[in-house]
Image 1 (tube, rainbow, N blue to C red):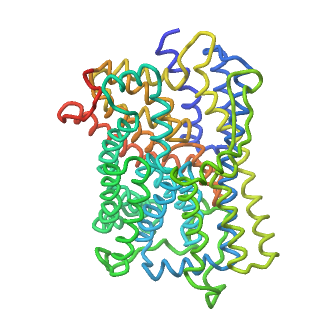
Image 2 (image 1 turned 135 degrees about the vertical axis):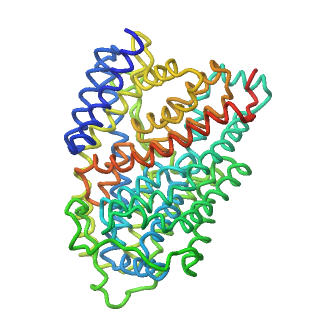
Image 3 (image 1 turned 120 degrees about the horizontal axis):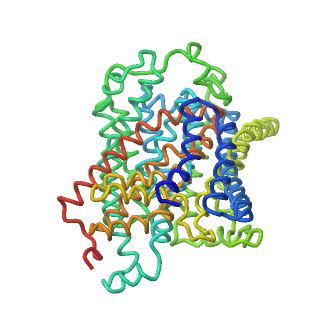
Length: 565
């Protein structure tokens, strides 16, 4: 079977799902089961992927689904507890004291606080935390999900304390041939990754500096009374300040410290600068901006998550610091549990539930429940009950509300994630046909030739779209990208960097990330509408990075210890 036909067959289930979601506006509850069945059929017939492997991949996917649902439940419960305790009202009033302008709030809450959560936890956690917090602040559910997805861009490559680089790129590149090249060049694997990191932060910084402006403009265009881009452009100075306040320390950290801390340090420094600027009204337009009155909102904007309005609490039950304490605790625990220098990561990951060689195949699955952000969110939720002195009746109601909201996401994800695993595992077949994602990537590479760097980020984005993970995309495609660079006599470090940046951008359109974020605000069933909006910043990101990559390959002397060896 030809490469062209195989690549079309591999793409076919994704095309069907995309058309159903974005074209016909069908819900993921309908689209994803069909996508799963089509993927299984294509893998079985065209890849000769054994039925046992399809079932094993499905079971593996269910393990991952549990992990995702666990995180979602923890995020929903956290928000619901804060709502019932009255803390959300206090938090909302605190942000109003900084600025009542929703555009300013987006830069602070989504771009900077969301990036901090990404740097600490990764794996879709920022959307799961930021989206319900935005709803609590008075944002429409659809806007909250859209913005929660957009934050999963610049910070993602260094999410979870650098996991997409340290695990994704390293795991994807690791092998006898590659390590032999490193040895011949007298360079360590970590040094090679540090070089890649220095190129990634520059690429991300150039594209990412405008992401706060993108967030603001899309909010004012799609959710404003005037449907105006201009009301977003009025924030250009402040938005660029927010972008630079994050990206400058982000770049410096990447060059000096490597891949673990760019997102963490960039967001922390950015928060200090931007909050101070907002309080003083520096670069903030004199005319504020808000959503139209809630009673005029289209039903389509609303989810099932309801948050207590301000007028229910005439007097704050506790201070702003106490109200924020649960979120600050989550952030602190996430950082402490992920730093390799501390013992907590080893302790938490040592407790695992695993199923090796599922159904007699080489496919295995495991979960480390105590290491998941869901556990930290539940712990913070328990401490919230004590700290905010909540009545048990309200606690039970919070658990009940959160459990009901998780059911819809569960149904969709039990089809979405197994579909992903079939894609990823399809390379293990009797005919030794490359896996379905690799076939699609090889077709692109073989048909575009010397301008391939323009498309390299899109390959990374494809992996993230399929897998919902920068890390998994890097695992799938980093060695492929390196191999293409060798064949085209181009620097491998830059090609791998383009892969890592593209995979981060692809998180904005990853289906199961959209489902997960939607679930946290009760917005399930309209995933296609979110996809149609987040595809805009994704295209922007991939075009900018692709052009930068093409120019750098041809006109810039790129550091690569293996280039030409």
